[in-house]
Amino acid sequence: MTTRLRLAALMPAAALMIATVGVPFVVLAAYAFQSRGAYGGVMPPWTLENWQRLADPLYLGILLRSLLAAALSTALCLVMAFPLALAITRAGRWKNLLLALVMLPFWTSLLIRTYAWMFLLRDTGLINALLLRAGLIREPLPLLYNWGAVVLGLVYAHLPFMVLPLYAALERQEPHLLEAAADLGARHWQAFWRITLPLAAPGIRAGILLVFIPCLGAYLIPDLLGGGKTILAGTLIQNQFTASRDWPFGAAVSLALMAAVLALLWLETRRREEPLL
Amino acid sequence: MGAHLELQNLAKEYPGHTALAGLSVEIEQGEFFSLLGPSGCGKTTTLRLIAGFEQPTRGHILLDGQRLDGLPPYARNVSTVFQSYALFPHLTVRGNIEFGLRYRNGAGRQAMTDCVEMLGLGGKLDRYPRELSGGEKQRVALARSLVLRPAVLLLDEPLSALDPNLRKQVRAELRALQRRVGITFVFVTHDREEALSLSDRILLLKDGRCEQLGAPQELYQRPRTRFAASFLGPVNWISGFGLRPEAARITRTPPASGYRSAPAAVRASLFLGNCVHVEAELDGGARIVAEISPSEGAFRPDERVFVCWRPEDEIRAAEP
Image 1 (cartoon, each protein chain N blue to C red):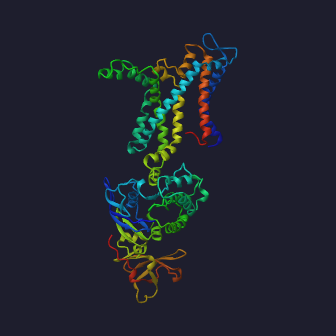
Image 2 (image 1 turned 90 degrees about the vertical axis):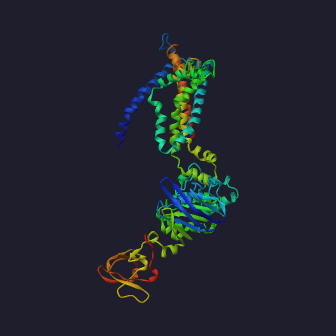
Image 3 (image 1 turned 180 degrees about the vertical axis):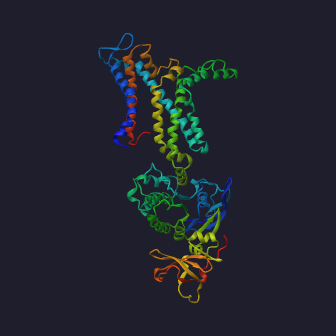
């Protein structure tokens, strides 16, 4: 391909990115430094007030809680996905079927799946109904609208994004490496620790980013399963643009979240020279 | 160093397929022992059974009288050099060689230094496997195993991944190395030249069974079956016996006493530099190739000649 043809082929994607990422980013950046309008929107004068409000313990707490929820969900995803990915690489002819099952949830909208969790977890939901009927509990357990439900929802929704990069990294490993490790005297867990795990590192890092970033900005799951009680960053931003009609502050929170993610990515790429994915 | 390795009626069966059908052999201490055969003959299976990567369906493996079968690979005092080398890509040469040192007692820093020096890896210790040439990778794989001073070293076609020019050189180095360390080598190959040039003894395998066991010369000169004769080198089949091309002479006059001969017509003559391949058709109809020295003269197509050989060079092999 000539250079010109190559550039032409890149144009549609570039145009789409500029229109849907670049332009809104500039608008957001402009909003974040102005004052709120009475009925939404923004008005002069230019100000740093929105950024000062971020330092308020209330909002700092929300950001911190979001980071914590995202970190906890990512850790749980990793712990659950690793054995699963490892099992799939060793599943022989069942491999493709198992991979298809991992991706099966994507066939249904996240909204519907989250509502399904609500039906399972609520006081009159399936789980409580069964436990009540079995006589194991007298009162319904408070399964929904709390921190635990939010993390459960985040882990559930993002597990495939951890499984797939881990699977890709593990699948690439030469099977003889583990035999060589055993041959040189390493027991199973020693071989896992010194061979399997370090070689899966690129997949682990990719999985962490793929899960942590969307978890940090998640809105739908914390809002539905947290019931508004557990306010995370996504819900906070949504509130500013709707109920609170404080667009400039909403823009500032959005940019702060984006900055946190970029800082993470920067640290990650600086540590390793090889590409992430 | 070195050990006496004994396979007793060793068998490995998979559903619908027998990889190894009862193999019994004793391998001497310090011997360079080759398992030779075509792909699927069971030679790699035998090696994997000795290493412990697979368990036999029947039979036993004894090392100095101690049973190995049933033990996991990490508990066996044997070590494998893999065909692909299976070097750990995330570890340096040093990391690869040191890998087993923490699990196996006896060896240590001194063994490490000796091994690195012996295999000429001194300047490469901080390289990663992807930065090494094929020959260097192979030496690292050897060092990684030898540093543990195993009783038996198992080598699974270790030369096949090298380019042909390097292969002959490494072949010589491997034999010298084995002499030097005195460890019993069990060497798997499908290359008859490798087996013939390296081994003290060769076990020729076919369909999971021992076809013939013996010293290289014995297998080459006195193969017991047609398969063994053909697998160990080119052979002409003349009614009832075989004749290696280099054992056949071509003369214009009937040969001296002590030779047998058959009248023939030259069909083609191929000059190969160090030798000449003369293709001749015996009057009985059989076509043979004789490998003669260029000094024995040139032969033209359709020239009437005698194909001669010494009776002791006749290969009396059973069918098939």
